[in-house]
Length: 302
Image (cartoon, rainbow, N blue to C red; front, side, top):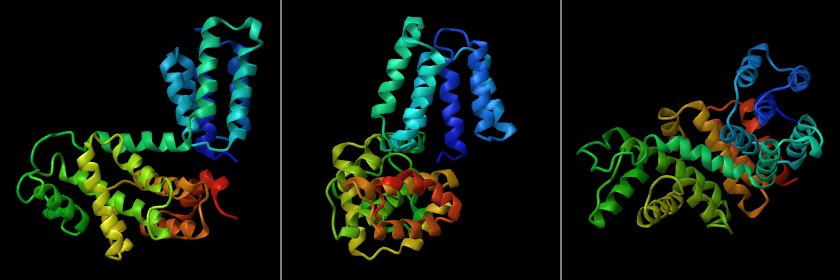
């Protein structure tokens, strides 16, 4: 079942692909309108679709919208439905323009290979790219005072200092990264240590797009591993993260927790319970939590 955001993402892809040949035909507009009404979307949502239909959409933008859809839709059924709608809208193979054929091939490849984890990593990259390590300069003296409750951040600073280095970039971004790391590692460590693929998943989410060199990545992973041995106070960690994040960012964190839990292909009942508890500590409502959880439904232990 597609929620409102997913239905809107579905229609955005259709609207973008309709421009593949440089013009949106009347029958294409009508089909999108029929789907919009059938999806029971709010009238306010109509504006987002109309804006895409007003002027040509670039090839690259069409692919971006397709990745956004694939980045939140895991089950293959809805992906196949979107592909079928696109193929129907473009008409028979013999009547398709070279531009339509090219775009369709790219869209088909994305829908068959782009995973929800790929989408999550891209969201995480956006989450940190504007702040983390944007400035390669030493943090000013006393800059960590605001984050005194984050013991993991203090430990990162200490390990860097032991290696003759300083806490590069924005301390606030380092604070967020360590808090996120502790939460991710908590789910990974429910097995009393890293389970197959979980360390790699945490490393990917935390570090692949943060601009960290290998030595810094190892320091961060070392610190979040140590936190497990300290019997981390999850409520305190979540409280600190709430202080420095938006609700959308917290929902992304819950998504990331499910990605780590599913690294071994199955999300256990215990992992679901722990993620639900963290969501509660992050002041995420039950409907919002269920909206994220349902994206991982096929991997949750029954």
